[in-house]
Length: 72
Image (cartoon, rainbow, N blue to C red; front, side):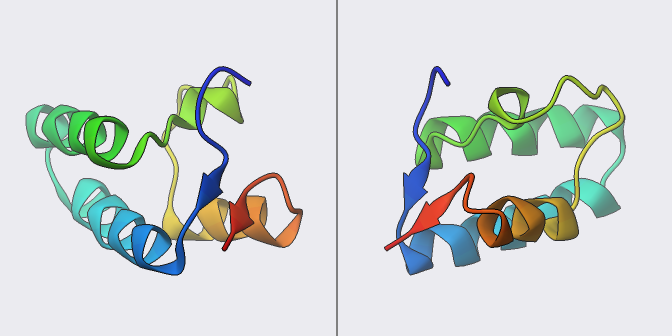
């Protein structure tokens, strides 16, 4: 893993909001939101998946459930 894998509860809540915004946005806006998630919170989906099909809040929750992401 190249980047951060431990997040606060606040960070996870904010990342979830941004992921929802990303999912509901068009292609160009999605790029902006993904950049924001990386810059503000250090979350890089590519650390957890090679999939190019995007990710949802459910995918993030799966990472927390499987303890690939720690919430402190």
